[in-house]
Length: 193
Image (cartoon, rainbow, N blue to C red):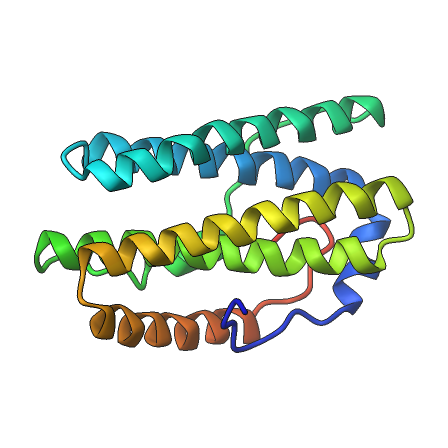
């Protein structure tokens, strides 16, 4: 469904489970950054009516997710902590075209957002299936469903603002690029991506 070329090794769940505090902290930052990214898209493209209409509810949802993860952290006696860089996203951003026209830049921004949502969805699915904590299984199942919807929205918006064949070609290039990123990343129990 998500079109990812390289699946996460299910062993990641075992590693993540041992440092669930770090996973929850990183998850909170991911939700915060997702809301911020959506706001940035709205600020940069206020003239794109469909984009504003489709992404505005995602801002609210991502911020609600951030609040839910903070609540889960607190209930477990963990604190939010210092901001941390997301090397996965930093690597993905290298794919983004810097020059060219507005349509190309917007396509890349939307597809990068779709890719982040797709990888998050895939990781949430693994957690929802394999983590031993029953409460977190349900917690992450809900996030998985939501991220799948966001992924679809970003793909659909890209196809709205650019020819579908160009979007499909660029998406395939991104899937290949992301697979190389994932192939070269160690499994970490302190990061969602």
